[in-house]
Length: 88
Image (cartoon, rainbow, N blue to C red; front, side, top):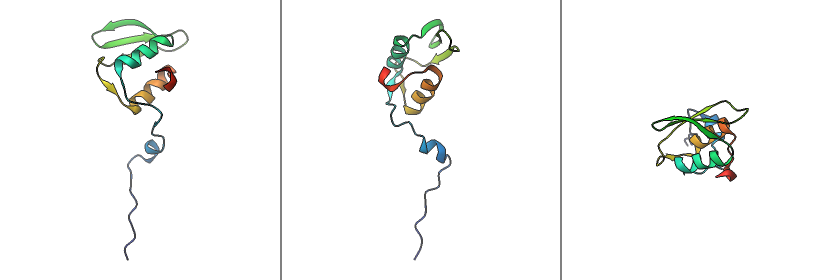
């Protein structure tokens, strides 16, 4: 009998840390949540917005309002901004 093959993943650590707690949201909703927790638009050119908050490094938010941000993009944004799922 042949052994069942195990799935081999290219990035197993990413799969283990997959951010299931982050929903997919529209960029406009994510930006509104960032504004509620204290981020402000420093400057804007097209869809590129530079956000600023005291004692945090500036963050570039480069999404059109109608774009859907998936769980991984939300996790990365949260790491840069301090956003939490309950802030949405």
